[in-house]
Image 1: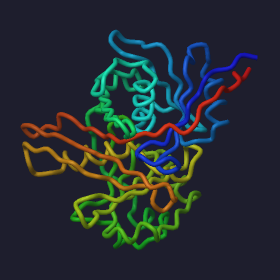
Image 2: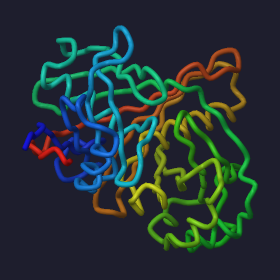
Image 3: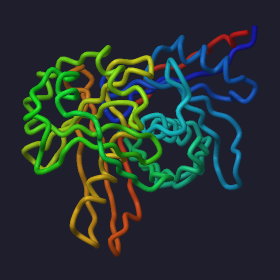
Length: 301
C-alpha cells in the first residue's frame, strides 16, 4: 500500500502544543477529493492541507484545505502553517525573508515568510479577496441564546452583529467586554438551526481588550469541529470589516488577536488592514508556526 509524508504543526504560536494544530500532506497530486476527505477525517483536526503541483504560473504549490467534513476555498491557519513548512523544507524560494504564492480555492494567495535563528518561522498572508460586509438580519436575541449570553451583551463600541468575509464568510458577534468570552455556553443545535441558509457559516465572537488588542472565540457547526483555537480567515474578515467601517479614508491598522485561551490552546494572530482613498486595499494576517511531528500515512482506497 502506498504512503505519503505528512507533517503536523501548531500555528499562530511559538510554543508547541498550543495554537491551532494543522496536518500537511505532501506530494498529494494523485489523491482524489474523496481520498483527501477521508484523510482529513482521520486526522480529525480543524484543517488538513494537501500540497499539490501549482495551477498558476509563479505559484509554489497548490494547497487544498479540508476540515473533517468538507473542503474550504481558503483558510488562514492552513495557509500560514503550510507557508512556514514549505520554507523550512526548502520547497519555497530560499532566504530568511521570502515572498511567494500558494494556489487555493479562492485563487492565488500571496504569502511572506520571515525566519530568524532560534525562533519559529513567521508567515503572513494577504487576502486574495477584498472584504465584504453584509448585515445580520436575524434576531439578536437568538444569537445571544446560542451563546448563553444576554442580548445587551452583544455590542462593542457601537458595533453590532454582522456578516463579513475575505473569502470565507463569518457572522461577527461583538461582546461588550472580554470577561464575557469565558462565560459563553455554546448551543450547537441552536446554532445549526440559526445559521441554516445564512451567508456566514460560523460565529466569530470578539471583544475589545484593554491594551489595544482583540480577544476572540470561533464556533462552527458545519466543519466537524465545535470550536477553533485560531481562525485566520475569521481574523481577516473582522479586520476587513473594521477597516471598511472606520471613518478614516487613509489609514493602516494592526490588531493583535488572542484566541484559543478558553480551550487551553492560546494563540496569537496578527491582523492588519490598509485603506487608501476610502477603499480597503489590503487585509493581512500572520503568525508563527512550530513543527510538532512528521510521519507517513497510508493512502486510502
